Image (cartoon, rainbow, N blue to C red):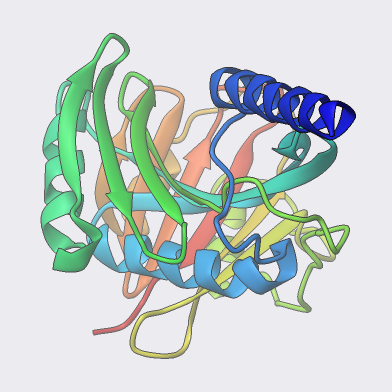
Amino acid sequence: MRRLVAATVAWGVLLAGLTWWSVRHDPPTVKEQRSLSQADPMVDGAVGRLVAAVDGEAWELTPARMRRGCRLTPLADGATLTRGLDVLVAGGSERALLERVAQRLPADWRAGVHTDPEGPRLRADAGEFIAVDGRVVTDGRVRLSATTGCRPADTDYADLLPEYPLGSDLEAALRALGRPAPAGADAVVVTRCPAGGTANTIRVAAGAEPLSLAPLRQLGTALVDRPETYAYRSGPVVVLVDGSGDQLQVAASTGCAG
């Protein structure tokens, strides 16, 4: 009997210790622990809502990011999946953008904007344990994202590039810059829109040589005009040209209609 009592006490102490350690060291995990593949459609839908909320801005979808190594339990690892988009705005108007996005998201997401030590931050709950975040990454660039939280990694998630043509707007931008159109895109990111259909971003690298972005001004309505970055709207397509890195990046994004 004494051995049983001692074993029970030892087990209780062990559980208490594991709980204490987990609370202080582990990030939040998904209550039902739905798998990563089950969560992906919900993240996709949340990003579609974000795309619809930034209609009229200069934006582009960013590639999905999968990170392994989070802890589901003290004995089991998991992974998180993050999808999202970047939005370019005039410097100093980042908080105003985050507040507009928060107002356009569904009421039951309880979206709000507050200020933390790094600047204005949007947070929302898209349901099914999908966290939505918005933050300033550099002056004039805001990143919106939806994240699964730590989940069982039942798939090696990867962005499979759909067979999307470059499109006439992207080709027109390359011609204006004197750059040849490649045979295919370097990256294609697609997400579902709230009312059906899809939004997408098609991106190509167009060489490392410096050049003027001025020829782009005749192709559409300017959204962002900076020495190294230019974005414009041509009908339903937003073209964003970024020369701030080693390679000139040209992206054409089609948003959610309606």
